[in-house]
Length: 204
Image (cartoon, rainbow, N blue to C red; front, side):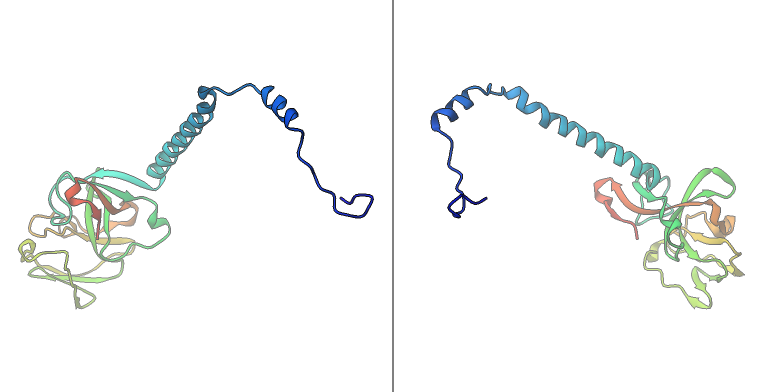
């Protein structure tokens, strides 16, 4: 804005007396009034976080408890872990994944095992040594003391099925006993142990 002389206009401060009067006309806020909006924001954020947690657990992650010792040494009896229920809608099941599935002989029960062979793979076991498509499978997740000497004649994993085995081979009931598992029975991938603290970490 320009003045009549052409110089830039300058805004001068108000009269100090007027400022004092204006300030006196504003009633002081008490502390409870100031705290109320902050409390409401905190409650809102808490409710949003709780709702997000419920949605994540319901649609993405699910807590489960391990029963038994067939997945030692990584998973112990009564370990609590999260399984990802959504991942296999985006990616394929891979060899080596630790998955949770409905037991083929009783779908009311759930098993947790490792994927050893995929649909169409040729598999055989010779005195505890696993061969997939003619190659010896390297299994660093199976300690020497947990191996066994069981054998299985060569077979081809049927379409839409997966061959599962527990890491504790000498005590595991798995696809060597109940056969390959259909894809429709697999409902999650084990991803993270959250309890007890000594077992805390990612499942490999």
